[in-house]
Image (cartoon, rainbow, N blue to C red; front, side, top):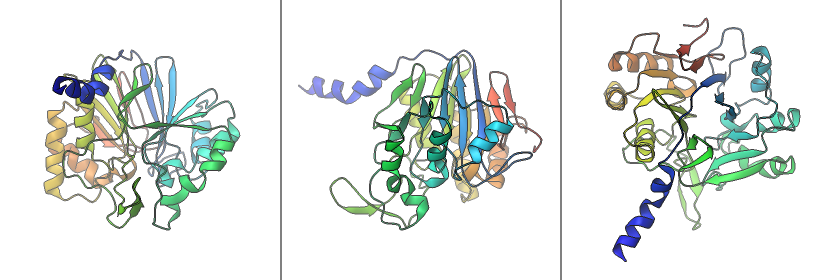
Length: 308
């Protein structure tokens, strides 16, 4: 019986530990603050192209930012069935309704982390937007797919599911409150926070929306799913803009130990924090930089645009 219990506990990682490698990929930032020719905002979105598959990661804050930037970048948003929502905040979900209205053949499957629709007691649009608009989204034909455990949303493309928080990375506001499934009022630590990743010949590509669960916690979870694979590139928001030097050095050391060779910090990562992490990781400026709208990564490296 004891052996059976151990097997059942480990089952999600055993069944999901086998994954095809992605041969060709491109990840393009469509929403973040920094921009040259395009529209910047406090938000995040990126289009993931992996072999013959496409996933929109988050949808930005304002209803038209992703649509307008994609048009300027000559990116086609038609026939993209899957949208991945890293967490509930409006700066990651605010564009979804208008995206669905404009691209009726896209965004039918919305992959969300378990807990995203728990009731938030903070009366602030950024915290309540997706729950307030859930019914309208469903009426438009958006099907929410809940993820508690790691799984492949498409062959070779993974969600971490809800992230086990091993290290004390408290990358969220300490003022929010949430009602849990037992009816208790507890601190809102963004329990649904999830990231997306896929494996390549050079290593794992990891995309994060805000990293409220902690970027090192996120990486530790990915290592459990695909052990013995280096974390090659990470891109997105990592919510380290307020960290002191001691915590940034700790983060940098852990990133180095995980094999990270490219660091593209966007959204809530912070410009100064990105530069400090680059210094502490010992990476050159063409491998660790601030991501702007239009910045993209692919098999050949990172292409930052005119802002670097």
